[in-house]
Length: 164
Image (spheres, rainbow, N blue to C red):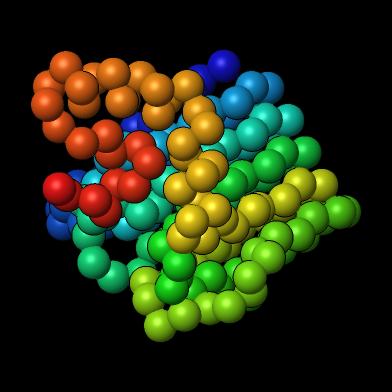
């Protein structure tokens, strides 16, 4: 199971902001919380797995976030700010598949464009407070809280946008 994200420039002369962060989840669970990425482009490949991606970090450069997915019998959970705009118009479905966004209220915030294909899987969108709760109830938050206590800083997993 390869669960290590890699950052690869799309071309040799590409600017730093065209780099792509790749997340592979095969037959397991992977969680990328807090300040784990500094790019606006993501490739997510999941096969019979679950992946949680936190897209609330201020370290992600300004502009639209693009996520290309290949989901096969898997679940991808996106933790996004309350006012994020989710665009999944170019997403293809094979068999059962859907995007669950319970609030369904796109705000005037950052646009997150999801493309690719879902085969018998789903993408769940957690916004604002629900996203914070999703991050809080993880072992990654506990590890981050312990690290922050030792260093005298604030944990980044619960709310990456909190700087104080």
